[in-house]
Amino acid sequence: MGTESGSAGVLLGQAGILNLQTGNLLNWGRLRKKCPATPSEELRDCIKKTLNEWSSKISPDLMQEMPKILECTLAQAIEKISPEEREELKVSAKLFIAGSNSSSIREAVNMTCSALGIDQLDSVIIAPPPTEDGINLSLEYLQPYWAELENLVQNKKIVAIGTSDLDKALLEQLFLWAQVKPSSNQVNLASCCVMPPDLTAFAKEFDIQLLTHNDPKELLCEASFQEAVQESIPECQVHEWTPLWLLRYSVIVKSRGIIKSKGYILQARRIPSS
Image (tube, rainbow, N blue to C red; front, side):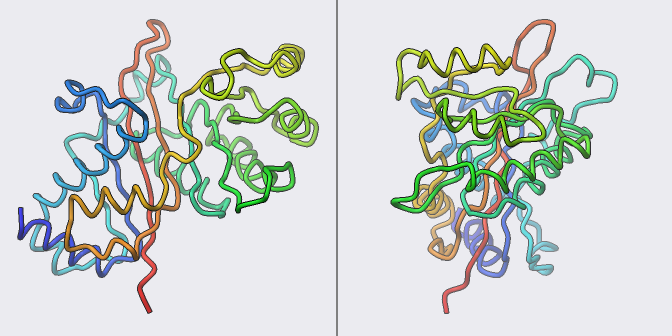
């Protein structure tokens, strides 16, 4: 693996952007046998396995090209959706923004549609963007992100948009302000074993679906991303790389309620050491 990870390290030392796609995890024998205990562990496993497999298939042409945007994708793992089966499937996504740039949303949605060979996602839930220490999540902070999602709904790239971890007060503020109303709100059952009654009542009144999840507050922090890359590609200057966004998607067969495919797509940026 030495020369393989060495080549990958050289490429990562020259690129400015890394786009990583896992493809359909249901096709990964190793991950299916070993059930990761948490979403964070699953994600780290996925990053490492994708990087390892990609490293082993680097072509001489790619080494000559030295692209600024590095596409780390396992071609055999990508499953496009055919037009004939599109109507039978629901494609949902949850988006985690690591940086504070709302324009990442458009890029994440476009990249996912392209990877799956479709024009539109049926639903996108956005996790609360990280705030600086001491700053509480507020409507003002959420507005640029939600406005970007609304644009994508208006441009028919997304059908429905939802939120995650908003309490009743913030969900109500967003609902009253938004042009495209949230269709769902995810609640982390680790933080509350029972749905808050005020949130339940508000959601029922305005037809907002309450869903549960078990994602940590920060699914992809910089440190865990850098660790995963370091383990796969020891030669990489991982301190230069920071994740920008992560999207987890699932494709569900509507009539049977079973998952046909699920995967992760992420983008990271390199900031060269001065």
